Length: 452
Image (cartoon, rainbow, N blue to C red; front, side):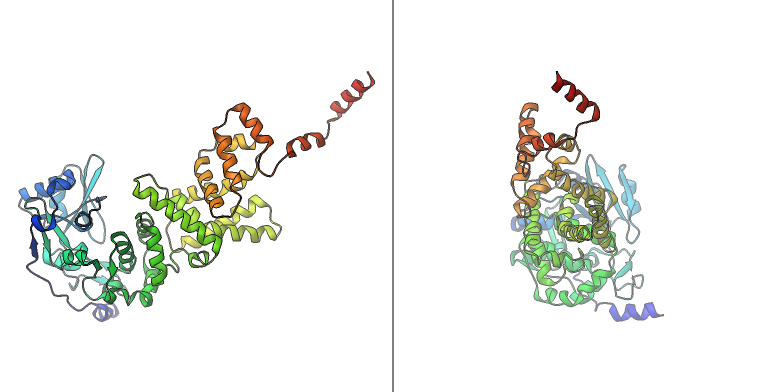
């Protein structure tokens, strides 16, 4: 009874479903079928040949309209998941809340979803905050368009006719550089709080301004993100941080008050001059790599975002007379545990983060056999990149990463010379050799030699 009552309270006022979309021909929008993934075209063709409606939908259409190469393709269809599965040998049904089909071809995967019904259906189940928990009702294409989050994502492209079906004036919004939500913003944010993060990401990526009606409720509704499952929030954060526009995204998150709690104490880090410079350098480096289509590492990026929290914790422990290495590992665990409650960082990524952090004190040892052992470590390069970033932010002298760069590429003889001039060591190795205590046997041999 309580759930039904809350569902009525939080259910959004029915958004008018446009039964007839605007039909935009290729002469106006300019997207040719050849620009699409051949696999996406094939999926649509097979479905249409078997009597179903099928369209490339959402982000791929939006990105093609603004000249961005799509990274993946989604297809929306009138076919049920079981019907889609029967048509494609390499496919599988996934999902609990709403079943979808992954159709695989080579290394590419096309996500195929069935048109969804209006969210006012009785089958919709929400929690006490209005977030949708279960919603398995299929519907018409017009209803499916109404269910999309932003107007620029409610665009359907037919590869056969090369027409775009536009139910909510998304093409016009793109031309006007406006990001507008479909329906009542407050209700849509209650249904799925992640839409607030998605709005920030899309606005930064596409150069769109969030519509005032969609922007106004965000600051006061930001606390709803606390009810989002940690794994889903982590996935959305990865999309944001690896969008190629993470600097703009994070700046916008701060303006909207959404960064509090996403990365615990990130707002505090960004208020520290050294920590802020370090974070921005890391994000700028990541954006550059994404735009150049180079590989990026979630472990490396999260290691940089959280480093100054680890550093502060580590320094406090060392002042409390804890030994350096155990203090570092304790600080690492404490900071990562603070994250675990909100972001479901995978074990593999946590392992990468810890390895990068654990290497940092080892870079300070530039004498003896330690440098030889360190350059053999599998994560040496990632650790060195992290060290250089610390130097660029002013945390440590640039001489240290420069010395390691020379040492790692030098030959045997050159490495011996570099050990003698390591940063901060000077003539220390020679002095240490002179001060080295002789073993009893050595002392005896020396006395005999003197006597002779």
